[in-house]
Image 1 (cartoon, chains in turn blue, brown):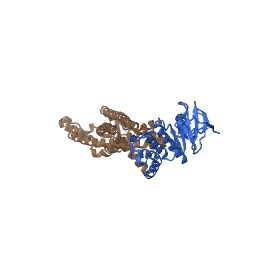
Image 2: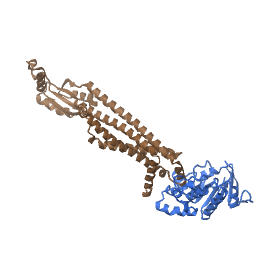
Image 3: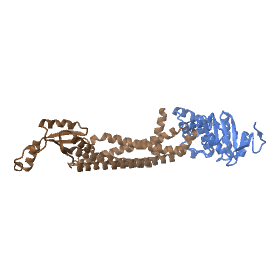
Image 4: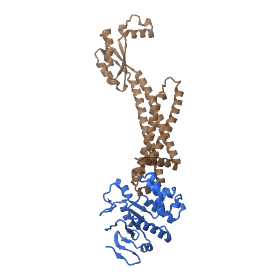
Length: 212
Length: 293
């Protein structure tokens, strides 16, 4: 498989269960090493990356999960701030940056709420804020709308599109055919560990445009 | 390292202690108990060893001076005996003193017709370490001026003293090693529980790019605080118990305990250091395993 994603792109990665989507994410975040071939992410060679450099690679990525993975004991502000603290940011920077990012995802007014007091869509927006807080080059969203109703899913995908418009590369793994076609972005379909399609625009319904 | 990062480690470490207060309390309790058992046994062992050493130093080797030596030459032999490595001191005991002792013991009538010349001049030789008594006996026998077969060593008593010392030492070492392992195990379990309760936070920290050191340090701080607390608590209880023990044995002449005033500093230092090391190493070992997974 040969795949290149350029800065500022918005990619949908689609494929049936077991097709290799999760393996691609694990390779990109250096959770696993490639058994063959070469993987380069934001200038880091995953084949030869040293353990000490893995956290530095991950600071260039923001990962969003289907199950949000928020810390129940912390409120919205603390959940987002936690990701900054984890990379050793100063309290002053945290106080300045967290409100900005919460504003970006539209949750400024719910900064003191606990995750269980939020809807699924709001929880996912907190997760997006947490992924964005360290100013990553790439956002990797693993089934970000998998636990949401269609209206909330559209809201989340719109938010990701806005973030992409601000210059961050977005790679979204999804099963949601309607969303993929609605947003008309580059769609990479994989099956059995191979790319079966790489098209610009809709994939499931509209006429695909083969990528050069 | 930035001040705010250090503050973060301590805040998180303390938060961990209060987050699972019961297991923290249990860990401090068990480690305190282990330290107390180790400490009590060590203190008993130190006291026995001190008493044995006193007895050893009281036990002497008797060295008879060859009768052919003049009084002056017999007295000068003492300096050569004292030069031997394992000799602490050599006391001269003239044949006149021995004779007087015998008169006192048996009465003048029994000694009638005898003169002090029937006895040898003697030296009472006290050793630095009775463990090397046999070698010293050989050296004394080889000294010119010492009577043939004139060196007497009470082998049986010395053998018993040496055995007591060795048994006490061995049991102390074995017990201390076993209790250290128990303490480490308890500390590991406490930190394991702490990491389990915070597994979600740890996984998020790894995803956002926290280094392993950054994730590990709050747990190490937690272990260090718990271990040091246990060390301090054990010291307080130990000092109280030792003073009581000392008072109880004061009226018994045979038992000469070492006053706590001579022991408090090494006891405090050892307890805090042991607690600290158990805490730090216990947590490091646990979190390392956890971060590898």
